[in-house]
Structures are given as structure tokens and as C-alpha cells.
Image: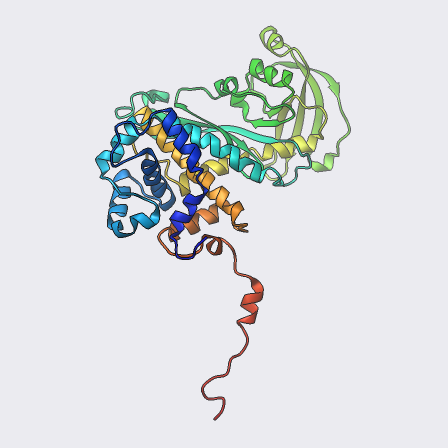
Length: 392
């Protein structure tokens, strides 16, 4: 990458432009557009995400203030707030949804060999959860949440190897988490880690029959009987029990007729016993506990998303505008993750995002920016040099 180019324009090199143009043609996104094409709209929104702008007004203000360098940043021109807001309201969000899914397919394999701490198996590992974004029910009447308040849910299937999302589904706040299992196609031999809100035995049995493994926690009202005990575990590791159970209530037993494994783990840090259920009888009980512990990774991902890219403050309130906004936020995250691998950066995705945010309008090499200095160079610079008075 040329050192004379702006950092923002170098990040845009990781956008597969040809595939984006095909999606624009598919959904006729540029129909009757003059100054603001779909690609130009994408650049405006990505600029807002990567630099941390809080509103559409801030995006247009910043770009208008740097009008003399817009061409070098990758823009043909900038537009006013009304034009950008109107485009977010009317341009088909599926352009950005399918483009985000395309980037997921590109970025996920780059992190497929990432190690997960305390995990020895090589299977594909997923964590499933959702995050809620509060909004005004008066402005976003479609996004009805609990207690007559407005809310948008972003259901995420996160690959634990590299914390790269594998699937995103955006709904209103009343969409129950367990319904998300019906929208997922189970991947054979993959592990799906989820909390007790996703315990839907009909859906979990479908995953089981497809050859996928799931790990969750039982609901308080789950009724069962113990059918087998296992003793091949070390109590010093925190495992208190490992046995097979069978559901006893007629409805649950009909939905999930096969045995389920139950593991009881003692958490030394909190002093509590935690119970897990899974359909996998092959891995060790400690591995089950460690896998569920990594469910917290998706909570860290949601926290990162809300702190480092703009999702808590929505840039529009129609369903189309909200979905466009959130998908562009995911695209920004994937661009940062792709840039990190391409530049062989030792920094985390969070640190790379921070460096890009504070240096977006600087003329410097992206690779040098996100790569730590060579220690040998620093050592060579510590050599004592002669001063003006050494010859006196």
C-alpha cells in the first residue's frame, strides 16, 4: 500500500467492489440515482462507522469540511444530510445484508485455525446469543419490544475462532431467542453453545439428528430422570457429576426422545454449582464446562460492537434504515478483521479499530500503522551518538 494514500482509502481496498456492484444491479439500487450511488452511500456510512460519527449530520459535516481530499479518500462527492437519510430509508437493505454475508464467507476462513483457550477439540465452535438496541417506539413503530417500548434485536451466531460472526438476523424486540434456532441450518460436527433461553427441545432435537452438538443450561422447570452415571473425571478439576438423563414430561419426551448428558461443575471463583446439558457424550466433562465458559466471548463481542462502532445510536428509524445501518456496522467490523490478517498485525481487532479510527485521515501506510515496531530497530536506535562538544 502506498504511503501517500489516506488510511481510510487503504481500508476500502478490502471491499470486494465487483460483488457489491452485482448486488446493486440485482436490486436496482442505483435506479434514478444522481449524486448518491449505492457505493457512495456505503462509503459515507463506513466513514461514519470507522471514525465514530454519532449521526448522519456528523458524517456529512466531517466530509464537507474535508471536501478538498474527498477524491483521495475514495468519494466522488459528498451529499447533504437529507439525501443520505433518504437513501438509508429507501435503498433496499438486502444489498448490504447480502454483501455482509459475502464478507463473512471471505473473512471467516482467515480465522478458522485460531486456537480457543482451554479447548483441545478441532471442531467448528459457535456461540449463539442476541443483543438488544433500545429505540423510540414512536419513531420506530415496527420495532415493538417488551413493556410497550421500542427495541431492535440483533441475533448473532459467532464463530469462537477469531470472534467472527457466522450469521446475523435483525428482528424486532419481541422476537424470542429460541425462534432463532428455526432459522439456522445445523452444521454437522459443529458445537453450538447457548444459554437457557434457547432450550427448545424440538429445535435441539433437529440439531441432534443433523449431527450437530449443542451445549446449554437446563431451565428450572425441566423434569428428568437419571439413567446412567459416569465416573471418568477428576473431582479436583471442579466436575461434581456427569450422568445421562431422560426427559420425563410427556411433551418434552416426545419432542426429545433420546438421552441427554448432564454435567455439574463447581465454580471455585463464585462458589456456585453450575449445571450444563449437551447431546455430546464423547468429549470430557471438563471440556463441556470450558466450552460453555466461552459463551462469554459473544458478550464481549457485543460490548466491543457497541463501544467501537456505532450501533447504540441509530441513523434512521424505519425498518429498512435500521437494517442498513446495522449491516454496514457488521461490514465495518469485517473490514477491520480482514485488514488485520492481510497486514499480519499482532494487535487485536479492537486495537486495529482504534488505530484506524484515530488515523483515518492521515497519509501513512496501513501496514506500518497496525504493525508493532521491530524491537531490533529500537535497540539500534539506542546507540550513543557523538555530540557537538566531543572534540573539545
